[in-house]
Length: 58
Image (cartoon, rainbow, N blue to C red; front, side, top):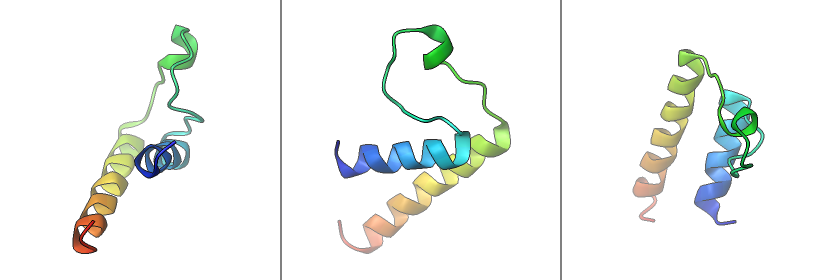
């Protein structure tokens, strides 16, 4: 798994309480109800990670 996928999975676990982003092939395992504040926090973390990456020149 590459660094970006690891970052996405970590954000999903921390902010959305989703253990994996791998497709499981079953609706109850692939679709999740999330709170809007959790989604906002996840998007903010992804944005901040991108901003930090850009600042480092990656």
